[in-house]
Length: 178
Image (cartoon, rainbow, N blue to C red; front, side, top):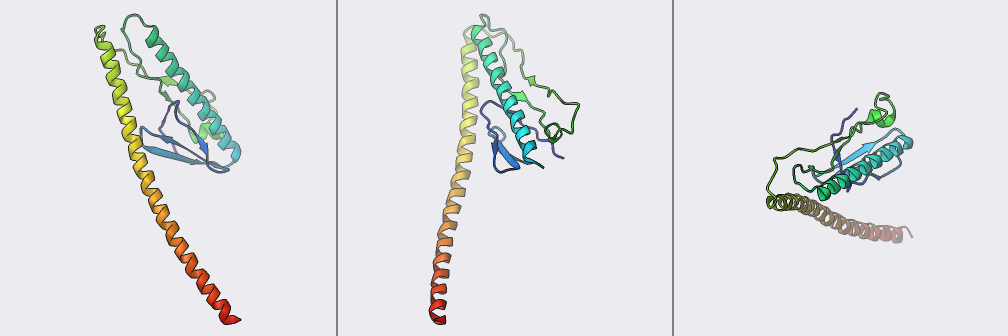
C-alpha cells in the first residue's frame, strides 16, 4: 500500500503504459510516477479520477486568473491553481468507501496590499521565477534524455556488431556441416 504525494496540475498527463500500468510526470518534483494495478478496470478508474482532478486544477487556475484580471484593487493575489489530490490506491481500487468524493483544496494566501505600481513588477517577477524554474527542470530532463539516447545508440551499435559476428559464425558452421 503506497501513498503518493503529488500535486496535479493542468499540464500533467497520465499515460497508460500497458494493460495494468500507467505513469505521469511531475516536472516541479522532477519525478516520474509509475503505478501498477490489479486489473485494467482499476487502471481506467484511476485514469478517470486523474483526468477529473486535472480538469478541476485547470478550472481553478482559470478562475484565479479571471479574478486577478477583474480585480480593480490589488488587495489579494491567488497563489495559483494547484489542486492537492488525495488519489490513493484505496480510493481508486474501491476499498476506501469513506472517500467517495475526494477533497479538493485550493492554495491561496492573502498578501499585504501593494502599491499600484509594485503589483505588475511583483507579478512579473513571480512569473519569471516560475518559468526559470520550469526551464531549469526541462534542461535537466533534456540532459537525462540525451544521455539515455546516447547510451541506447551505443547499445544498438554493440548489438549490431554482435549480430554480425553471430551471423558470420552461423554461416561458417553451416558451411562446415555441409
